[in-house]
Length: 484
Length: 98
Image (tube, rainbow over all chains, first blue to last red; front, side, top):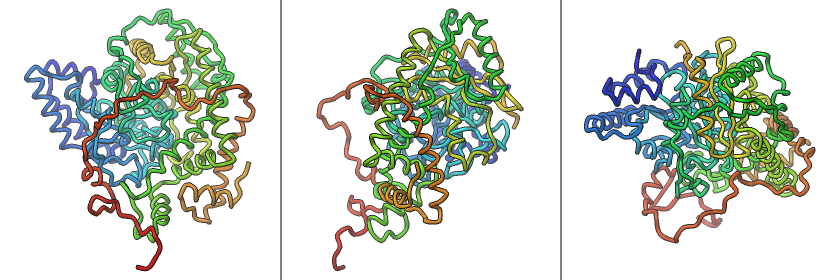
């Protein structure tokens, strides 16, 4: 078996047993990126020199018996995470020349555990999109079929792991940006509880919803990475000061007796038969594993999409006001006045979806509309969170499809924002309530993967990873890989 | 719910974004559709419901008022479009003779 075919866990075992070196593993990925990525476009920057330096250092530590927890594992980072002295673009022309002066906590923590950085992955501009078509650096293609989208906004991270161009990748999720691409690319993706992973150095989109996480091939791989990424960070005032459990150990916890809730309103949505069928088959797998299934109700679920599309743009319009052409990033040519500098820098530097959301957010926050939209949406957000609180009185986790279908063709939804926004209909509620969610492969249709989503109670990432791990022990969907 | 040209111009100015007048009709169409989505919020009874601005019901932690960052002005300004003597340069702000 070739090295890139191994899971992260198998690679770690191999490195520990000296079956191969980190340099060999890293070189294999770099070679694959060179030959395969031109048709996928999952990387914005490949950091070959740094990767080989880090791999050499890891090998050195192995030879001295001083290996770190994830020593020598080559992964990719979403280009939303600041990496010191390395281009950090957030998929935007606005930051197309921005070399971050410091590293995000997520990246620093992984560096501290010996993780090798292969490069920075493509993404929807400022994480706004569900298809990776809004990137200034071009569309990302789905490795399962290059005519299809990989999902978004973490589309580059998902595509590179699916194409076996990296062992795993970091990602972020504001309304589904980890789970939806995980589903569309046949991967396991986890968005932790809000506050579990530090947002320091993670470029902000909607600060009350953004959360960093992982895209990996298996729940076991995701558990390994999440353990080292999580934890309290004094540099992020919303970071939780609560001990991080040993996820790689927790995934083996027994799941018999697990109570899984099926929100009847989700299943009342229009969805293709193949989605319903795969979901029902997954439910049968859980029944066989000893779980009990219960129907639950989410009376306010219909409000999720409108609440999200008021709050996320409102927060984005505030967060993105910092891009003014003065302190960093793109600046328009020959500004005639300060106002001209602001206006033209922002008009030329942002793409159309980002501008659309800034305009919506500005409108929702403007005098006369604040109460009707922003405040009303915040109250409705509470109603949705209350639905979850009620549900978790009777069940341990909530099951649904991750997306309303498999991937769609590039260009298919590009000019229909609402249709694109519906991609996240099942994933948004977890962000609104700040809860952890995981997506993993549960089927396929016409050669394209499908994902199953589980949403857990606050801080129960371990339980979600364990439920996914047990599912993967008795199914093979996660083992399938695209032919390239 | 429909935006007038005047409203769209005002919002764009507040956001400091120029919009080409030729793209007004298509942009307005898209924004109207998104605003239409918001109508659903009106159907929810939120009497007595506390606004939720954040998923964590935590208070902001405080720390001692100590210097924790070292001065890295040059490094921080490396990505700036135009800098002189440690200052960010912008077009002239105060009107007057040259």
